[in-house]
Image 1: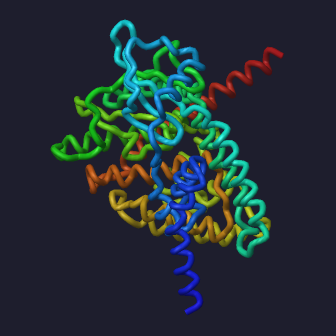
Image 2: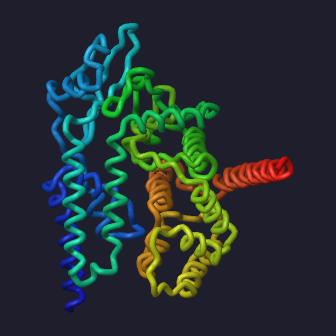
Image 3: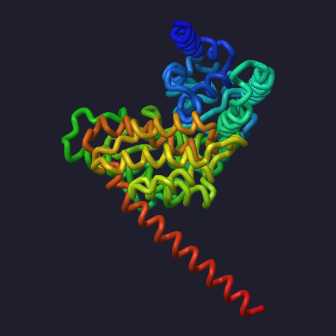
Length: 407
C-alpha cells in the first residue's frame, strides 16, 4: 500500500507540473516541452503530463514588435506589415508583410527583452537542481546536465541568424527533393532577432483527410526519406517535427516550418546513429548496446556494462524476430529508454533529440498509413549513408598518403 500511495503521489505531482511551470515563466515552459520528449530520462507519466504544456501567451503589442524591428534596422524595410500575428509563441511572433516589390513574406520577430528573462530563468533552474542534490533519489540523477542540455536548446532558439543558416542548409540538402518545401529566407532582412522568409499560402494541417491511399503512401515516403536523409546522410536534423511544424500546401506538398531547433550532428555521432539503426535491423544487439554506451554523455562509475549489453541484446533480438513492417518504434524506444534509466546511462543531447524527434514523427506518419514499413524505407538511405562514408574515408586516406609521399 505505501508503494501505491507513493506512486499516486508522484502521478499527482506530475499532473500539477504543467501549471507550475507555466507560472514560473517562458523558459520553464519551453524546457518542459523539450523535457517531455526525453523519454530516455524521464518516466512515462511525467512525459505525458509535460506534453500538455502549451505556449499560452498573449500576442506582443505593436510597440514591442516595432521596437524589435527598429533595433534590428528593419523599421522601414516593409511596405506593409500586419501587426496582428499569424502565429505566436513565448519566444516570437510571426507576421505577414509585403516588400516594396509586392513580394509577400513572413516575418518572425523575437519578443522584446525575452533573452534576459530566459537566461535568468535558466540560472534559477540550475540553482534549483544544485540545491536539490541533498534530496534522496536526486543525487544520482544527471539533473544539472539535463538542465544544461535543455537550457542550451532553448537559448539556441533565440538566435535567428542560426535559424536562417539552418533554413539555408536544409534547402541546399533537399534542393532535389521536389515534394518537400522549406521556406526560403530573404537576404538582407534577417538578423539575430528578426527572420524574414517567403510566405507560404494555403497552409493546411498535416492530416490525411480527403487523400486517396496512394497519395497518403506518397506523403509518408516523402517525409520518411527526408527525415532519414537528415539523420543518416546530411546530419542536419530538424528536431521539432510536431504537427504545428509540418503542414501541407495547396498543391499537397509537405512544408517544413520553424527551423529554430535544428541539430547539426557531429560526423561521428551521425555515423553512430546510422550504425545503431542498421545493427538494430540486422539483429546485432551487442553492437547496438556498444553504440549507446560509446555515445553517452555520462556513464555511472559502477555501470554494469555486461548487464546492459545483455538487456539491450534481448530487446533487439525480440524486435529482430518480428517482420520488418511490424516494427514499432513507439514500443521499442520506451523500453530502450527505460533500460538506459535503469542502468544510469545518460544519452548525449545530439544523439537523443534526433531519435526522439523520429519517435514523435512516427505517430503522425501512422495516421496516413498504419501499415508503413519504417525499416524498409530506412535501409536504402542507410546504404547510401555508408556508401558515402566509405567514399569519404577513401578520399581522406588517399589525401593523407599523397601528403606523406610529398613529404
